[in-house]
Length: 198
Image 1 (cartoon, rainbow, N blue to C red):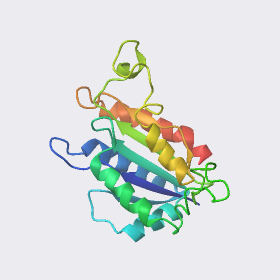
Image 2 (image 1 turned 90 degrees about the vertical axis):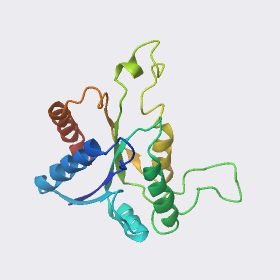
Image 3 (image 1 turned 180 degrees about the horizontal axis):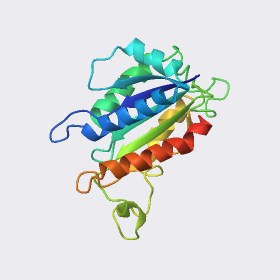
């Protein structure tokens, strides 16, 4: 039975209540639990968490699914704090052993010291920006995709600890043009698409 760890990385802050990402967490947990083919654990970063327990969840999981809003073109500070603390705690405890380099040849193999090889991850992001801001010439993101632009460092972080990337899923224009039922429908289809490769 495959083991799925789902993380809601949307803090409640200022005018953002984080409700959509909390809803995504529920959709994801229900999808995998209801199939009867997966064990599921989850974390909501708004709840108190224990660093050692979070490390154990990373080490336990076959697949990690992250849900995050994008604030000011980065993941939110509370989610970044979670990674800074949990991944650091996971040093030589099953998340990563080193940066991968050896003293005999210190300029090579950086980023190969992760301990989670053979495991996978997926990320969803939620945006105020419309999809056209990424795809149309002359628009804000200059035709750079979410994954190759804003989320590049996030993907490298996961590669550093040994995880392999599954196809991401991005929700656009969620503040001015939310379409909850349509979003749910297309997201669950995405999960159907990736499930055979988990």
